[in-house]
Length: 391
Image (cartoon, rainbow, N blue to C red; front, side):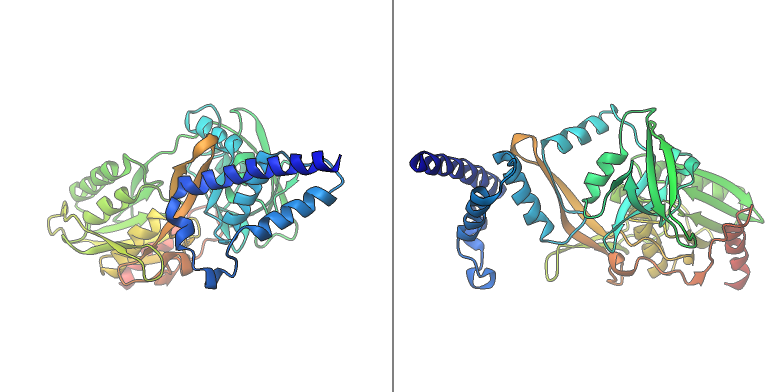
């Protein structure tokens, strides 16, 4: 009997070992050969297998499948990097996100991120179910449909929030200034976010930009042309609750204002790693048009919003007003892996033209213009427009 049990374990180990090295081989055969053993302090997988054997021998309850053990080991490896945006997806989560992209699932229309280990709302999108339900930037989500998400990955939590169109999801949130947590129920839907709106207020042309998608740069160019036709010389670019999007869109928009070759953003691949510099394409659609610019941001301004704001500010084209931005300055790459699994890994971080990390502090306004929730009108925008008289 002992011999049979030993043989069974040996066979299982061989299967798992094959799976582990298959994954490692897919990621790059040379990986193992480049490990600095003196730095790692572990020169083989003996500790891993010791723990594996001890648990198999002593654990008295139902065991997970061999596949789940491998996925758990990989998830532990990924978690050791302490990067909330680097995530391994087992087949079920990979398939879920594929279905979501194909339009078979709905969402709540909010950008979700992680800050200091907490799941936070970056911004509810314009005219979205999240906005209608009352979610606000910086809301901390603690429970999803009654499930405590402490310790859950960002993408694991997002998979709980997403679901079939027309179904409801309940979010328990902690909000600054509220003594008790709030329970907010949102009905999932297909989310279509408008690109931008324009308005004129008090001799000031205002562009409310809601996202940086594939059509945003062209829509923004049309809005700037509309500004020129108006004959106005004051522009507010409203990036509040704009969670970002495509890098190219932010580069194109900055290029409408900056001379060719001016630095827009730097992409740094780790400390001491290679740096890619994105420069203005010098579109110059303003053609020396005399213009004062204020960019209005808040806690929900993230990613491409921060790139645009940082570029125009540090090139002395625009003044920043409002509240500190979110601070989403890392770059992720999505990789399909064998067996229906996938990996999202952080590959770089964004730096402003002057070399400041967007992830560290976000973009800090030169003029503090806080949002006042008790106001029925948008006094934050009104007070921003009044700043032109002080510039």
